[in-house]
Length: 287
Image 1 (cartoon, rainbow, N blue to C red):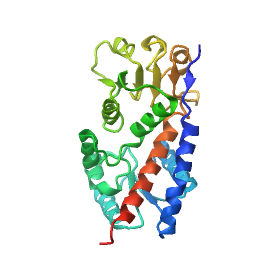
Image 2 (tube, one colour):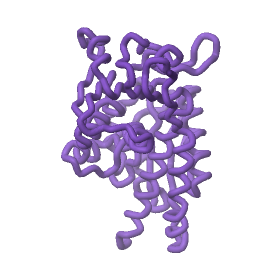
Image 3 (spheres, rainbow, N blue to C red):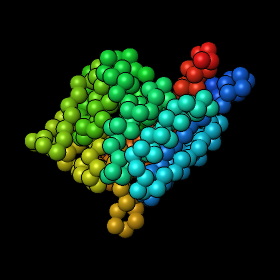
């Protein structure tokens, strides 16, 4: 029996629609949520991501602006741009599109973004708050995964969750969210032994490895929920994920497609964070 498809595209549209009343309320007070994206270099995938984010913002009534810097831009120029956006009261959210060129220290750059405008949730202050169980802004992909699971009625409490990938963008924050919702969580990585055996124990299996079609049907517990966070362009031009979708969908109970699964939810949660940042900003008296 084929797995149930967890449609992130339609749910993301619902999330954006649900934000319209908050956007309208802000507009009544003369404020419009604003998101500034910074793109350094010519990476084609990054350009697509930023363009998609800008389009989704406009659909939700959120003002978006894109700041482009050349591939060889020095780190100083990027930090100066972030400082200017931190000071701009019309900008409520700032995202720095990753990856950055080699001459730029990504951690230093992410730390330069004001935590109050860190709608990507990558600043140490926001990640630390998540660890404490009192999150400020949660990274969009983990937040989107949790929203998808909830919408699909996937039981998290008491479930065995296995995450393939330990990044601070996806694997670690998602593990914290799952723990906070009473799952038992295992994080696997490139040095994990008996990976397939561990994956087969999962009621919820999350693939965030950066390796196309790494997860095969023999790694999946029958009836499990499989969440695919990878996105790659195959040699034949098709977009594929970290999961071998066809065979795995015959074993899993539910599965996210690529594209159309987690990706749209990541953008939707980014916009939700931007609207929340605008609400918090406009609740504060002017300095």
